[in-house]
Length: 310
Image (cartoon, rainbow, N blue to C red; front, side, top):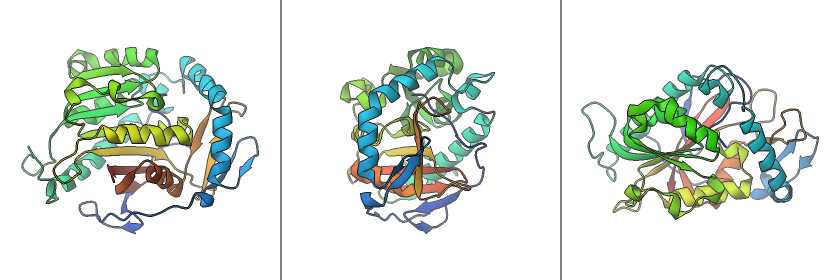
């Protein structure tokens, strides 16, 4: 379960910042909780099966999870998306550096907004720059692409959580000695994580947790559990908020219906399980995990969310 891939081609370098359903400027957004009806979540898989509601999807995932996860483990052990570099094996193309630039820009907008908020004074904020923070977590880290290109540029230390032991080991080489010295490495599945997996030096809470192209490989029930667990590890300040959970995932686009999920199964041409969820689908999972959308940016093929605990 590495930090993962854009299924339908190149990543978009243009994004629209959204809070709830309203479009606004990146600097100021207003949050609004949108209640999603599970009966509205519909979609299909690559074997031609249609799922008329969220309960039907979850029943199929639950019945198939063990086999699907085993197929995914074999797929990653066999090289994942392939490619000539570690970055390409993570995302399937050469767009990793551009995606990193976009991720860093999103993070800077989020941290600037955090610093300008009356409830978030932006401790340690640089003049004319984003707030500086102490500790981040990279979940589904793969070889550490997001840690290298985004998180270590703004955080003092990063805990990388990766389920695949080979990728977790390779990340130390990929990051290099100096970067790796600022990191902690945890080999664990997100769906199996508990308090014991959070580093001791994060006892006061983690400033930011980043999950990118990873939830697509989990069943909906496991996504909800993982998000709850990660949310419990975020830093909490005197106002009951503090840390952010950033989620970047694919969304349906192009000729596909944007309001319906698309699910691949190991029996299909890709030989693995993954699911592309709509915005409403993601929001339902956030809702069930006790999270609210603080900020969102929508690209042509992806949605990026900054979440806080309700």
